[in-house]
Amino acid sequence: MTDMPTTSRFALPLLAVAQAQKEVTHNEALTRLDALIHPAIEAGPLAVPPSDPVNGQCWIVGAAPTGAWADQENALALWTAGGWRFVPPREGMSVTRLTDRVQLHFEAGAWIAPGVIEPPAGGSTIDSEARSAISTLILHLAAQGLLISG
Image (cartoon, rainbow, N blue to C red; front, side):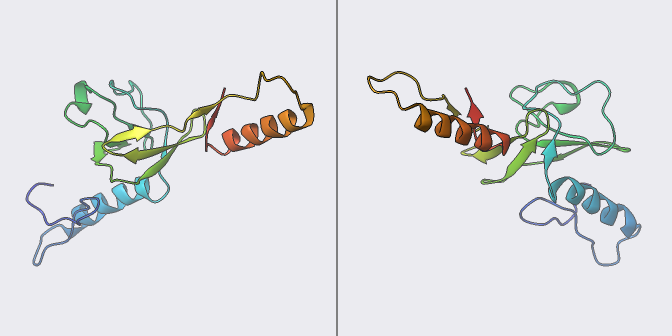
């Protein structure tokens, strides 16, 4: 899809005046939108493409990508019947990683995972009820993908 007009945010292909085979451009845009509407990735960031992807599966391309992912660092890689499609990330974009349900955010040119929070420990005065409540809160936030429990 070279030399085609595209949208400014995600480079979705636009139809051109008097364009032949408009369905090709339209279908390409729908394929990308299908991955972007509710972005969920199988895993990532990864440098090596998976060997046996299934149509509709998505990954985050990691640093120093190889093979079919070469030169696509940080992009969302979507496998389709027509091969790999890549969508460059935008600042503030969020995706859910399906392997662990963690929310990754694209900030300052990198995919960022939430921080790790350890349950309370130590101290000279131990309040077991407060520690239990804090530990439960950490577990619930981790279950929502908002942080990673230690």
